Image (tube, rainbow, N blue to C red):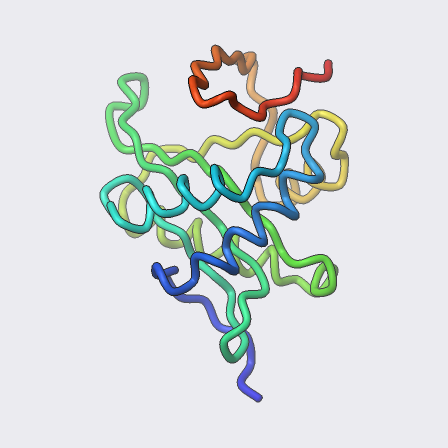
Length: 162
């Protein structure tokens, strides 16, 4: 049995990535899991690598976790910045440092690409996630996240909890 290793996700990983997002969105108050929408979003990223990267932590053919980075430009920073959109480790593999491995891989990738900043959103009620990101050098911003939802497909977004 091979040890866990990190690689860039491919379209072949789509079913397992969708499962991971279903698990993640069942934990977050702002979202309702929807496999059709999650598969569509993942496919948009996997088919256009200029939009972002998905890295997976695999053992043999099983994906144990994933991290998703979206690319954009910041006029404030004068360069490329990333949005850390999703980081999830399968429930049964949590607590063994695998999330830290994935995050450190993403941070090193960003350093090599001369990325100026990485921003993420985490559920206000998920103190464990907040502690995890703070341990890795993330800090709370003075900026307030706000959304305007344009879901024309009968979206499945739940009302925000504050």
